[in-house]
Length: 443
Image (cartoon, rainbow, N blue to C red; front, side, top):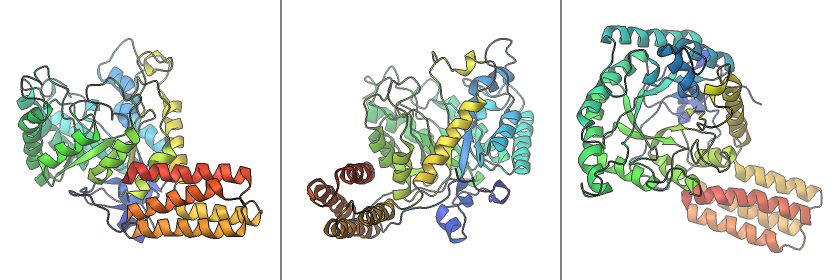
């Protein structure tokens, strides 16, 4: 497994830092901060990103353990302090951390903070200083809010303003917010669009105006709620129309509207559709939710899509558990260090496996198979030409042309008489995987 970016040289986070600039300097370490996402995504000239993305640990990985510490619970998950979680992230090899506001003593979900502002700010400042000493940039923070509920919207706007100031003290360049759960009066209030436009959009604009002069970006996170699908999430951002609002692309929470999980849903398409609007991401192990029954995330498929899209940011990760899972942290004698470390290893392996351009990988694979006489000269030349054409169309901003070339390559592989059966099966699988990701990103 390749080494992670050297944390000692990670640049101080500032909104607008991008992988593109870091790549010119021979490093992707400046990618840790969220930058403004495209407001009107199209298909510009593109180049596959080979960046060495920083991987950030969301402290929600230790949610039960840190909550036990904050609330001094006698029973439940083993205690782990917020500072200790940050220390462990550095020891485990993470490049950055995302410190949700839940883990600052005094945070309350339904009221204003229960401790003095000075005490909370001092704790946040201490976190920033601790992270600076460890060489761990803070990629973001977040609050729980419900802008769809008219009974708490005003309070949640006020709460979010408070935690925006804390984000600034902590050195977090962005703060995550939610749209809100589906309200009981949705139909009576006119339906999804009416509630989104009347309640959620104005609240997002209000906090964006407050956050902008403080250097904090607002990131709306899809969460299986009023932003359950890519369409709902994108429309909410477009209706908000504020330059200080982007998305945090939660890979584990796309699902049909009002569905309990994403089981059976095409979440990869939704993830890819939201990438042009996203200034951050939250990579989960299960794409359909912690309580889903489906397979784990295909990291190679996910990260190929990110790289094809020209991703310019860090890659925060978060580990979740189903309540009744035998490995749930609440049932374990120690915090889930091994499981979070395993998530980091899986994510790094996926990033490493996708770092080289898939077009180049496939052409080199064809060359090797030709040398082994598993692919004849005619098919080698024709397939290599089609893959080259697909890559050129991609770089020219013509995804339809690239899609056509990939389809032609698959058709040629299926019928070519000079391709050995084992080579045919392998190439169909590998080219098919690229074609699948292409469909995720470009349709």
